[in-house]
Length: 344
View 1 (cartoon, rainbow, N blue to C red):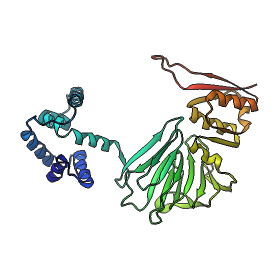
View 2: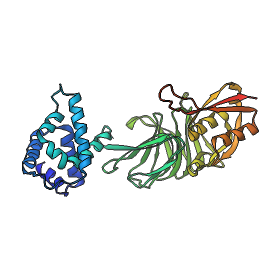
View 3: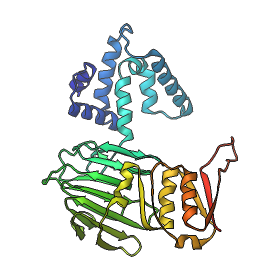
């Protein structure tokens, strides 16, 4: 372990060696080795070859001071570390501690595989490339969780919350699995498809553009195949009844156009349209007449503002609207805009 730490200091540490060093620091399983290494460098350090930004070092040390003062009654490793080796912490180990902090803020699954995630806020679409070269487009208020590497794993498994459009790199020996919330697994080897699995939606939908898809339910060996899809088909899994239906669609644009910034609705229930546009415009809707939810909408929206979207809706339906932005009780903080919809 001393050799690995020395390689890190010299800038010669490999990725695997760095992980071992981080594991020791994170678990404090070999404090003697770590203390000996730090003590030797503390003695050798003269303060003449400091590298990095001194202002940033001072900021970090001030934060350490503050944390020690807060928990002064507790004899922690952090306190002993600071009191004994503060010079080394500021000059030698700051880059390592920064990397360690980033590492620890990631999470690991049961196989101890480091995970990360990509999140998109309301009104934004983004794209992320996965470690295997697969690409994912994320719709508003969505996130995808994935391992930092698929090496050494039997399958390429990611978790989706919200909506994502996937272009999966082909690898028949290592299936690609999208865990759609807590309901379904979508398994492929290399294909193009869209998955919508928002928590506030009544169902999970899968639209297959290219390739083949198996929709499964259950964990590991207890997985059961609910459906096998062909290109041009759309599957809908009802969360309440846990029943799935598969239909062939002439046009998949209503399921995939959002990737290009367009929102296409074909005879879509008004309530579903509002949930989609709620995410697009980052607003809340207040329905004062439940009869409004009986309407169905057929329209395409691109770059319209919230007001333009609402005006289009009112032209085709007996609906009136009012927009206001509530102000928080403290510090005059503005909250999300609220759109109140009433019947004419």
